Figure 1 (tube, rainbow, N blue to C red):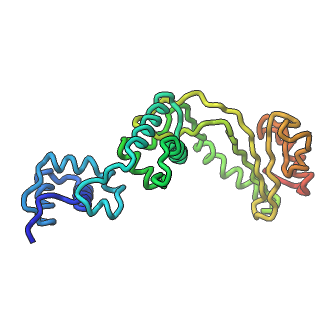
Figure 2 (figure 1 turned 45 degrees about the horizontal axis):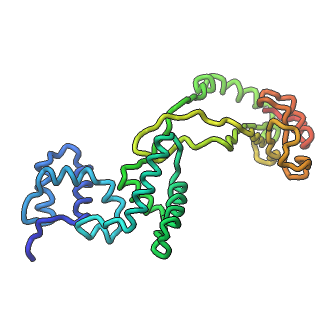
Figure 3 (figure 1 turned 30 degrees about the horizontal axis):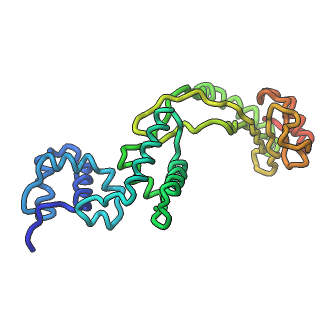
Length: 273
């Protein structure tokens, strides 16, 4: 069989993997490797090798059909592809956080507007990955405020806590923690070409409180701490009738008296937190 002078996409991907496995290899030596490995009729140029290495992500996202071809498959619906890419860039300029699911849903809307009908793509995760690679979109994290727990203080106080708990049985030792549901807050990750500045976030929240004893024999009903005594969404119903505990009395979990009242009503009178 006559040696070929061109590479298929699968061979290009193998060149990228060979470079990754041998990061110190020079491009001249890297160019000689595919000639020997794939029996090419001539050595690829340095520019060819550079272009192949720069497109590694594209090769990794290809399916088996595309890997056996010499060129990347053309976009089936270039008009849809372009309008969707422009929409993502507009969202990036407005600092709107996007998710993959949101991009796929917007693509479906554009497909209906363009009246693609039966020619509409499936908009799978594979389609999304290829769309992002074509336009240089990546998952980016919006930068802004950050904080961390005082781990040193935890390590210092843990022996004292363990010593105090030794005089209690596991069923009387409770652990309680809170988590906030910021149901109006936009995600801090987005899909864009560059990292974008974080905008002011809506911090409207509900606080959910969970508690259970150490041996797992008693799990208390979750407590929801809100702001209104009777939210309008309840339609004048009490929280018990809807099926959960609600309180507007606690501003934080420092209100231990309120939690002790919960524990007593729930049947545990010797709880230690």
